[in-house]
Length: 101
Image (tube, rainbow, N blue to C red):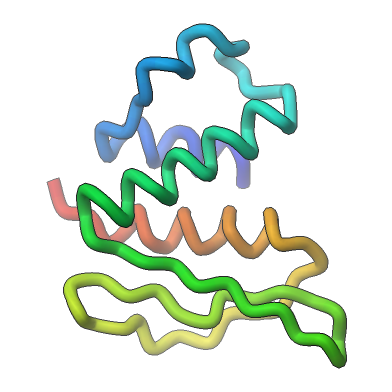
């Protein structure tokens, strides 16, 4: 999923300047997590796409609660995953697909 997300983000013209000082293959998880945060901010500020991640205290898992774009909520059911980062990664991927170039 990591490579797919990075490639889709590049195709949608997301390339923060600071990323050039990090390894281009993004093998470092810290770098990748920072990149995902920057991508989420870019989606929110530039494209008005908001991603909400929900934590289920009973199952102790995360899932995408909703993705809102231009006051329209995507009506999809997203599966639960073990970590916040996995849920965010899936949410970012789905959100990038909404951007029309």
